[in-house]
Image (cartoon, rainbow over all chains, first blue to last red; front, side, top):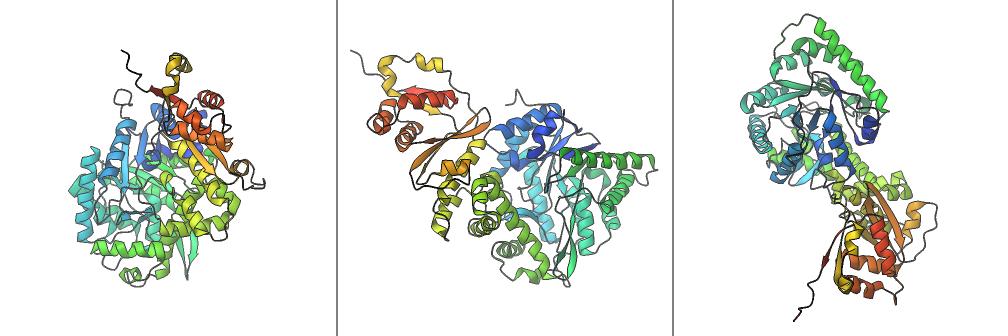
Length: 292
Length: 248
């Protein structure tokens, strides 16, 4: 495949979309109306067929980011070497401009849970996740971005704040960060913390990508929780927090994720344009601590 | 230990087992754990629903989801590529009984074959002219190599008609369904049992003469029509000839 693989293409500091299979054909037919797209890596770990051919078609003309949802950087049992090989082959084929994973676990004793599950933020977890990131970056031959999770619970033995935990991952492994502003808002609301010191704690220069998405408010037991369902337009509080992030760290590749109750492609593109305007406006406001 | 925490969390996700709530920060309602359990089970049921769309419609959303959640708790995924998850569902439905319609496992096999065919490896079709160049005295020893997407379902019920129209009345009549992907599109065709036996022999790499013996003229199968069908649908990707007789 090396002879036909596209050259790596940097992801621009602009608002792209998470491209989902039901939108792929419409996206191509409309002339690829987004500056870049991101896909979930595991959806393209297929032997062949129209799905793989379709994303190669998109990749020919647009920068592509690959977002892994199954590597499980937080697994106590370490990473699956077969899965790393599969991902490596896909990334060598698609040459994504960015590759990302999550600060979470989804595999225990060989069972894959289709969710991004929370870790206790302890020294034991920090050592383990650093080892797993080193392993992943080595095996993939690339720097990866690590995304902050959305959380509904926290563990009693968590002794490190999430922001400090992410900063330590960057310092010890050289990984970058994928700042999911919706996840930050969801976690901060559900767990009752202030996102500002969280933002102070992470190294701005390490943020290589931003995610935005919609969330839902649901009654769970005796309380309302924010659920990270990626099933609606980006909420106003998240856009406001995104504007704050932009004023602090400057423009970045920004992505709209929408996974459930998919709307027409135009609706998704309109949300990306909304994010682009927020980013453009923030660029005209004096930056407090622009570091990159 | 982190490994113990994850094991406890996993037991909660799959079986609702208690215990993990003791690790939570004091003051956080244990009901919050239910968000994770709902996400995991709900998303696996949705994945199975995408892989078995006709069964889902035939059984109805609620009944399918409840079966899918039970299946997922007993057979959780072992690989993160969820398009490949759930291949054991037809057999599980057969064993589950559950007063399910007797045709449900066969319909599930057809859904599964079509789902797998969509993701099977690519291969270029054989130019039929190359088959024409096989010497006539060697044709009997020819074995076809079929496209990686080709699947054959041997069913005890008329699931092809049901797949086309869920309002069709299922009949307890054996049939075969041939599935394959042509130019990126998965198609299926109903075969009578003799043609099904013929197709099964060709798929498993038997020679044309052996295949003809399995389902051929006495059994009612039509080898020539089957070859034309496979070639027309661009499902033949190669062939092999057995070594010819030694010539002195």
